[in-house]
Length: 356
Image 1 (cartoon, helix red, strand yellow):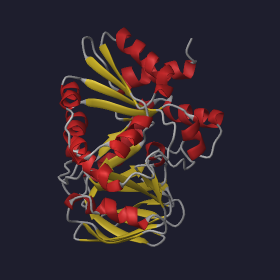
Image 2: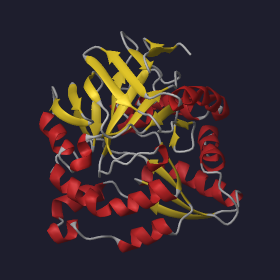
Image 3: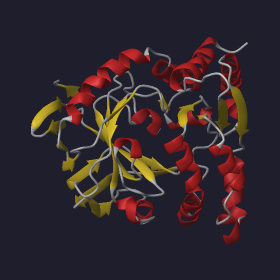
């Protein structure tokens, strides 16, 4: 019999996040067999809801095998079957159960970037056309990355997910009203002074329909609007690589200067992936004050109350974004000490606490 917390999370994913209806086709995708307890409960919940579940469970080792052995032709091969699968599903549950957070740390980023370009149409079908939700299942690797025991991490995860999402929704709707009326967002903090245009863009409140856990309100900035500079004191992790001390300077919306205290070469290579990689695709404001601890996992960390995150790369069409890129890299700025957010010159947050 499954643990009660797993059963509750599965119910939230199927009933709240996706709202599965009778006869809908639901893809349950898991990165590894470690997610089996949650996969089985989600499978059961989909059946209870009258849906038709399909499974796609991977083995984490295959990714390294692929990049170590695939030739150029294989890198460029387009998986038609995966596209067909994506096109013929109504919604997707994507469960991450990582066994090794550093599995891709020695892989050539150019190979990864090239492969991402090839399979981008598949991810675009899911992201833009389907209902989807992403969540973690507790593993030793995720616990170790967050510097917790497995039991501590389990408590951390379920305390962030198994909550009343309708209460979160009400709080986020209030922030959305203020953002939708604003033309500019001005963010200040240590080594940070950046202004971003959002006129005409619609803010999106996030209360568990896409990510689990959730707790942010985001908007896609005007593509040519970002002006100023920002320093990220929190690690920025992408494709298994940790980049520390990122400093970016923007002009006319574009990153014109970039540096990092650790893994700067990787940062630059990602920013040079394509034209859109040097422009902002998202400005997100974290409002989940129940997540206080940085865990080196963007799924949790971008939701921390009192932080903002600016993503370089792909924007969201649902938020009016027009920036196109194969990457979407969220970088988190902590405003809980000497930080502030202004909308059209009016301070709405100081040191991580809202004033509205």
